[in-house]
Structure formats: C-alpha cells, structure tokens
Image (cartoon, rainbow over the protein chains, first blue to last red):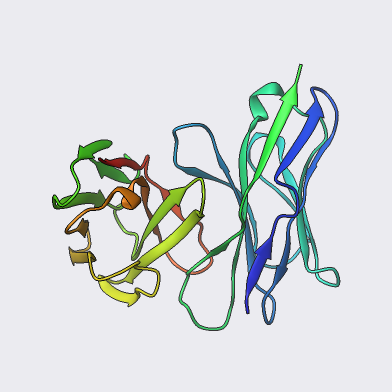
Length: 115
Length: 113
C-alpha cells in the first residue's frame, strides 16, 4: 500500500538551531513530493515541492528539503529555526501511477521552537 | 487572486439537521478536493473532482455525505442527516494539475451537537 510516514509526532528545537522534520514514503516509481505547513486555525499552506532535477529544493520562509531516492525520504530542514516556525508540518506524495493529482498525506509533525 | 473561498467558516447544528458546506476554487484550477481534519483521524481526503467530474469518492464516510460540483467555480459538500461524530474541520483545496501544489481554503469548523 502507498503511504507516507512522519515518524515524529513532535519536534522540539531551540530558536537559532537547525531543524529537521522527517518524512519517508512508500510508493511505486518516483513520486512528486510536497511539504505543507498549518498554523493554528488555518488551512494548509504550500512550502515546497520536488518534481525532478536537483535533489535539494528550496521553498518559502527559508525552508528546504532533500530528496533521497535510495532512502525514499524527503526531510524538511531549516538552518536556523524561528519561534514563528512553530506549527504543524505535513509531508505529502503524489504517486505518478494513476490517481490524477491526488495527494497522500502523512500524519503531520508538530514543530515547537522555544526561545 | 482571492484564494480558495469556503463558507461558512463556522457551523453549529443539531444532530439530524442537514449541513451544506460551500467552496469556490481558484479560477483556472481544474481539480478540487474535499478534506476532513480531526484530532483523532488527522487529515482525510473525502472526495476529489477533476474538470467537475468526481474521480474518487472512496473517502466519503457513508451515504449521509454527498458532494457536487455543478461548474468549475463552485462545489458543495452536504451531510444529511448530521451526527456528532461529523464534527471536524472541513477543507476544500484546488489545484491546476498533477505537478502543481494544492491550495487550501481556510476551512469550515463544523460542530454537531
């Protein structure tokens, strides 16, 4: 079955430190990969995506993610965390076989950045 | 662009009543998605449309739920009759196509008492 795993329910990091939010996937072929962020009482906002090309993609608010085909991972990273980065983060994949542009979402990881 | 528009933003209703949620996708987007988000079950895809045609409704919980997209600029999600376990935040999202990201609306917070 196709799935996305975010192994950490919560990630805690001090402001100014680097952060990583992990995502691994299990789908056939090379999927399209996405990261979204959700602030309290808001809809999901798109952060970045990997379609093809350079494995390191850069997105909004200083976030970046690295596609690793051999490890089937797409971890989200930021060199220096801000308190305002505290939110719920979702990884999503779009399998290339069928399904139009239906996305499979992970369960989400709550990021807490402490002053 | 105004983004994806959803109405109402909040809905409180009694068990057994009919509830209709509305969505206006971003102009030019040809795919529309309805999601439900709860603490217990996370984010669930209920149904999605491509060019106004329902493609996959396997996530619709039961026959009490129905969705329509009569034209490219409007969609509804109806629950009849509503039950307390339907309480959740319902999101609508739209997209231009497979390599493009989905844009989410602000959501409708539904409370069924």
